[in-house]
Length: 211
Image: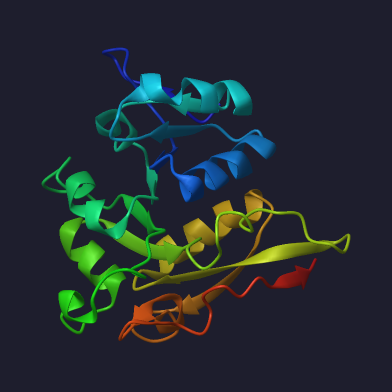
C-alpha cells in the first residue's frame, strides 16, 4: 500500500489525481491496471466518484480535493481555468510534485501574457515542483495498449526541476509508459504547450517505443 496514516487517522496518499473528467479518468484507469493506489478528487466531492471507483476497483480511492492535495505527487487534470482553485488549497506547496496535465486549446494567447501555460500554473502553485506530462494525448488514446507486443506508449516529461522530472518518469514507467524527458519547460518542453494559439509539435503524437 502506498498510503500512510497520520497520528490523527488521516490517510495521506502517495499519488492523487485532481479532476475526474476524461483525462483524469484515463489516468485513474492507468493506475488501476497496474494496481497502484491513487486518490481521485473533483470539485463536486467524493460521493460523485462512486461509479468510477466501483468500475476501477479498490486501488482508486475517492477523496476531497483538500485531502487529495496532501499527496506527495499530484496530477492536475482539471481545465486550465480551474488550476488556481486547486492552487488555493495551500499557500505554500513545500516541494510537492505537481504534474501539469492541462492544455490551453481554448485560451486566447493574450491571456497567457507571453508565458507558457505551465509557467503560469507553476506561479500559482507556490513552492511546488512542477512537471509537464501526460497532456499530449487525447483521453481516448492515453494509456491504450500499443499494437505491437513489447512496445510502450511514449509519455513526454518536462520540468525545470530535474529530480522532479525523474520522479514522474519513474511513475510513468511503473504505469507501463515509455517516458521521454525533454528538459526544461522553456526549452525542450515548449512543444508540449499551445503557443500563440497553435498546438506544439508533440501534442497529439501517439508514439510507441520498444522495450
